[in-house]
Length: 511
Ligand code: XMP
Image 1 (spheres, rainbow, N blue to C red):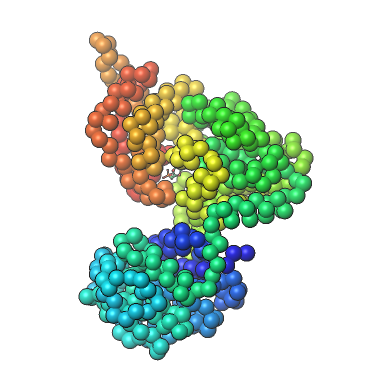
Image 2: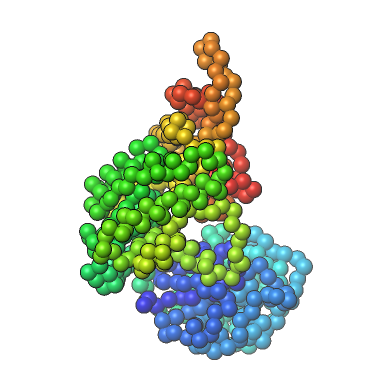
């Protein structure tokens, strides 16, 4: 078990960022809900606790609270924003409600050097976002810094190893934020620097070998980043005892299956089985236009085919999945369950049905860490920097029924679009880009003849996690040339439109 810093989440939008910053520094962290039982915070492996920010006022009726006994666990505590105010309130200082809200970048001035301010200049910019104010410090604390509008901006009790900051050290607008977090860790928390990739690869592969023993493990791969990194990590640990299965659902992009086979089998050496299920999927999707029905059919058919393959291997006892840390936090988060907007295709129901044990080698990792890990595992860059691609594939990018003819129109258009983005060096500036085939025909003119053909919509968005997204601002010449190239080269298309909708209120995919 790694020594770790625990972050108690009070609902701040930046909580995951705190965790990422600490991990960047080489220390392991876990995010837990604010109402985690005290007995679960007592482990000697927990070397420090961070109380995150949150949207509430500490005096609001249902604001999240913690028992003051947390300060008697003899562990260092750093409170950020709401976390700091809660700390002050619980340690007998005073916080008052204020109607004015201080928001944005402002300049901090150091008043007294506490350990958290070690090595920092006297003035530097910090990012504030709060309305409540501290008016009296708890006994034992000193005031380390102020801004023009906020008297107590950084407070500390170096002896008891408690500190609080009114600003957000985890956001990049706070100039020495990372250094402040590092000071907290190095000066207050006696923790080993264990979260380094070299360690991780070795400890995880050792662990996997021990758990798996002589058995086999099966994994469904798609050519996407998460399943590829999970598979390669497993392969490092158990070699050919890992069976990687790719199900060709007939809904992949042009040459995708061939490329996956080449990359995963030839280049990376995986024991890869390609299952051709295209005719089964297309048959089941025949005449189906409803997006949710398409998703459900694809999900169910996938599970059925995958089960059939797995049954052939008698020694398979484990199913490996590329679950990431944000999915894990989501399930323990303080936030209520959010409405299902689209039923995502995943293999979540599989392990129970198949009576397999689950192995999730990436469940400690954020997406950017998975890419980093992929690099260390020598996975080619083109694979690691691929845009996300949804499980239901092109079926949810063909509005209306999915047919062979419509699939091949969309495949050609999408291939031209993506090839153009790569040759123009903009593919890596975009988070996700793809074409959508619309269920309408429009009139056009080619040569001297009238045409009545399909419309392709092109989509390109930037996002950090797919939860929100902004449409990408192309140069006009890029749009013009890409549009001409698609219309001139894809038979059956006479019009291209560009999707200028953000998420929310739209979603990234059209279905
Ligand atoms: P939406 O359309 O919900 O998409 O804004 C957000 C991100 O999720 C991807 N997506 C999926 N990924 N299975 C997946 O593995 C799915 O069923 C699925 N549906 C959407 C989408 O491509 C985008 O990156």
